[in-house]
Image 1 (cartoon, rainbow, N blue to C red):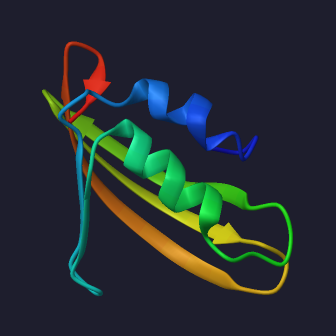
Image 2: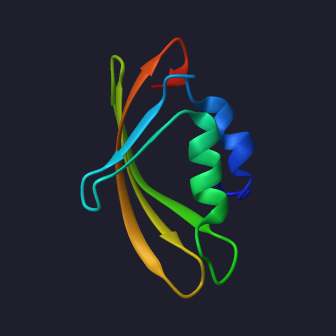
Length: 88
C-alpha cells in the first residue's frame, strides 16, 4: 500500500475478496474493484500508511493504520480473513 500501486497490492486479495465499509455502507467485490477504488480516490498527494497495530490469530487479522495524503488524515481499522495466504 505504501507504494500507492494499488493494482500490485490487490495481488494479496483472493478472487472472491469482499470489502465492506460499514460507516458508509460501500461494498466492493474482487481485487480489480479494490484497485480501481483506491486508484480513483481523490487525493492531494501520495498516500502514506503508518501501522499502529496488527493483531492476528488463526485466519483472522486486525490492523489499525494511520493514513494521510498530506492534507487529509484518517484512521483505518480493518478486519481480514485470510485463506491460502490471500485476504478474502
